[in-house]
Image 1 (tube, helix red, strand yellow):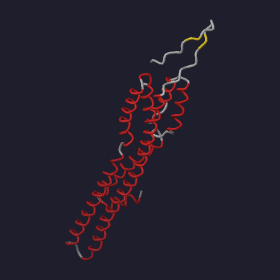
Image 2 (cartoon, rainbow, N blue to C red; image 1 turned 30 degrees about the horizontal axis):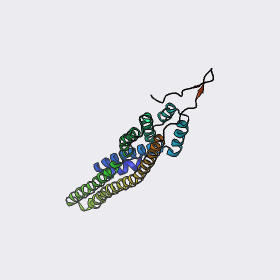
Image 3 (cartoon, one colour; image 1 turned 90 degrees about the vertical axis):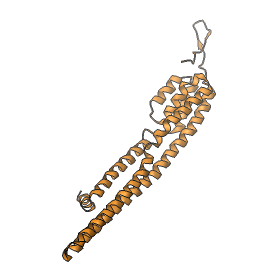
Length: 227
């Protein structure tokens, strides 16, 4: 806390602005990290295999419940396809494509803002540097020789603190943008692969349930798949 207070004291107004930007950046990084490691993450191969086994038993309702239990974009795409499984392959493909368009912005959400914050932090740091130098040279021009060294030292400290903070935030933003973009690209790649496999699975049709035997020994008609 003492170090932070010293930085703010030496950095001035623009340092406070950059500290606010840093807090926003950390919040965005934490939010996206939780998303990619938590509710946005799912093992697509395992999830598809679970759906395949459920559909083999001709239980679409159970497959939908499985999708409802997960909050990942993959589950939403799967549920959209399952909801139209009885309407044919074209309807399934359309539902999957529409849902993918809906979930893509959610995956990329707020990642691009990091690049903008990097530029803003750099400019704010530059403003703090220029402001510190201007105030320093203005002060030493009318100061006594005994005070000039102290004023010059304080002014240079303010300028360098602002420069360092601005560049530090920019580097953090760029590194986070690179890593989060890679994570988003992986999620989108897995989602596209899953969607294609799911479309092929549903296009093959749902396996009919085994015939039920009535009390008279005759086979009852299998239940309809229509919802």
